[in-house]
Image 1 (tube, rainbow, N blue to C red):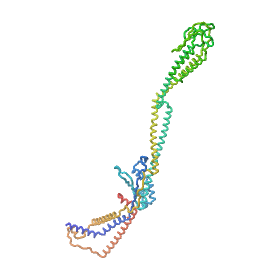
Image 2 (cartoon, one colour; image 1 turned 90 degrees about the vertical axis):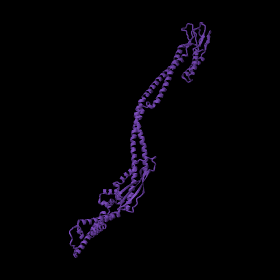
Image 3 (cartoon, rainbow, N blue to C red; image 1 turned 180 degrees about the vertical axis):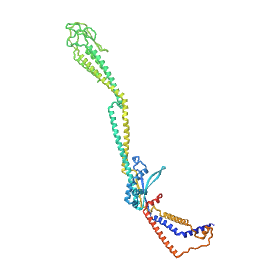
Length: 573
């Protein structure tokens, strides 16, 4: 049964082919000629690729920090926008005479877009700690002429290299220029604030908190000088009182040593009475005050030397007074009374006693006491010293009050200084930071100008391709044969379906239950043969003309149509 069915189908196919073979042939030839012509006339596209290596910065980043810190992929995207700009691509199209046929049919903007679609950028990298790092990229271009395609590819690679250098130099220069402008602004602000701080410190130079230790030391020194001044005033006052007492005890006049000695009588010590008139009177016992004073001064000098040096003012004064008294006593003759009894004692009071028996004598002439003059001169000098010490005391107290006021004003000035210097310190820190960054930016700019930074280098330049990448004519030819066969089969089947007919008695008997009595074969005359031959020739000419038209159309449509080829190869190239 299966064999019978297969034979029936085969017989049916053979019968149909015999009836519709010319229709099937024409249905196959027309689309086949169109597709084959199109495939044959399509231009061949070639692709060339240039490999560009990314050379890292030659100077270690520990010494010079680069100003270009963006990622390589991001920077490549930016550079691509520059390279693929309309001006750049239009220059390349004009230089290499690209898309001459396309420029006649479409606008210039579409030609630019077409070239952008023909350019490909592919990143190549390695895995670094789980992340993929780009170390190279490939630039490729496709076109009809392999020589031109290689030249265009190398030109695009050179554009990437040049644009990368320009971008890095421009970014480094822009960074340095920006930092320079910011540095100038901050410096102007810093100068203004520094002038304000300087003026504040000049106005309050001695009252600043930094001078607290100096002011405290000056207060201590002035206080020491004040205590020494007060002690000196006390000692001078005591000596002045002592000199005043001695001056009060000394006689205004003493006996003349060149006159006869007076008559001495017993009288209280340290008192001298002189005659009041020309008449003779009884005189008291006289004691030489110079000798007594000399002895007292010598004792006082010994006491002063035990406490002070020989250059001390009081020691010098005592030595001068002692020399004066010694000279005076040595040059003056001493009177010898007729009846005298002298008794000298050396004790703590250093007094000289002289006792004589009363006897009448003539009045002795009196002269001024020469010892009073040094005493009075010493008193005047002490008064002058005391006045000078008092003036110095007032000056010291005023100075101490001034320094105490400065110490009391220091906390307030410290707060004001903090407020004044707060902005100055922050501005100075900002200036230092900007200055450091500006110097680093200058180093980075110099590095980029000398091309020591990250660079692009063509590792494999583009060469002309030997084989086209598109179209794949073998594959397209097979597809055209399959498509044409499908159309032919479809046309034959459609014709059989559209115009049903019975081509045998058996087919009629199967279709209808009416019995077939007679079968008359077709009667073919000579005229019918001639008519069929004429129709066959006309059909053949029509088919040939149709095929020619289709081939011409395919040539017009496919010749130089790179866009059609790119559509066919999109996703594979």
